[in-house]
Amino acid sequence: MNTFLANLGLAVPLFALVLVGYALKRSARMPAGWSQGLSWLVFSVALPVMLFRLMSRVSSLPPVDGRLLLAFFGGCLLVFVIGRVIAWKLFAMNGVEQSVFALGGIFSNNVMLGLPLSTLILGEAATPSVALILVFNALTLWTLVTASVEWARHGSLSLHGGARTLIAVLTNPIVAAIVSGALFGLLGFSIPAPLDAPLAMIGQAAAPLALVALGMGLAEYGIRVGLRISLAISGIKVLLQPLVVWLLARLIGLPPMETQVVVLLASIGVGANVYLMSRQFKVLEGAVAGSLVISISIAALTTPLILTLVQGST
Image 1 (cartoon, rainbow, N blue to C red):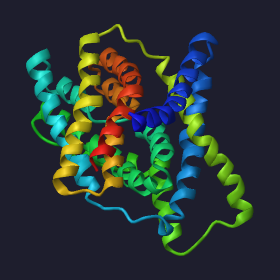
Image 2: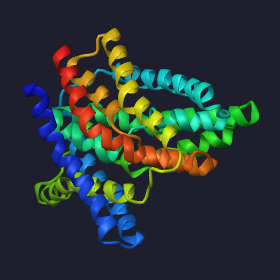
Image 3: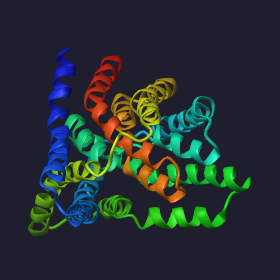
């Protein structure tokens, strides 16, 4: 109980910042350009700076057990299949709708919420594990759903679609910062002190700004359209996925730190990229938008609880 209250106490301020952003957007009626500008600052400047600085010290951080990729993405694949079956059997969805529905059950908001949570609760020692998942996350999951949709539509896979996904991932500022920062550190370089100080200040602002930007983004979505589907996606995301990932982590004997990281990241609410995918394919837009708000609200309680249970079992 004490561990749960401690984890909850650490998580509440972060979710409170999401609520602040939500309230600001709703009550102050900020122009759309403001929240978009803040999101750009977070994704293109603040978070990349923070990650580059952290990863430049990767050689001094604990080594990462690469099997965490098997636990995390293996769990994603299993839950994706389960999600497609649920969408087919319970909601009579077609192949494209099934794919987007299932993606909602596995694609976490790991950059804006998972990264700050893991750093605060598990410490900087968790950063290499989180970074490794972030590098492969977008490429793996977007490729999975793109292949699923292409197969549903045409009965074959598109080389053009795969190439477009790969280019988008490699040019992502978050991925670029992680890879370049790690190479910078592994080659023996270090950031000069006069430059490191301002970079540290930017990095310290990255997490709170990301959470406020997330709240502003959530304020643009409603939860009335397709509520049953939104609830189903949210349940799969914040309950089923962390359970499956935890079982795989236990099965392969993943160390405690990596186990906590993969389960924490799996327990986070639905990521905004799923909404972008729903808009791209023009299916389940309202239901997916609702799942963003509902799943993140539920995760405010379930993520600390799940992490406490995992910590007690490792």
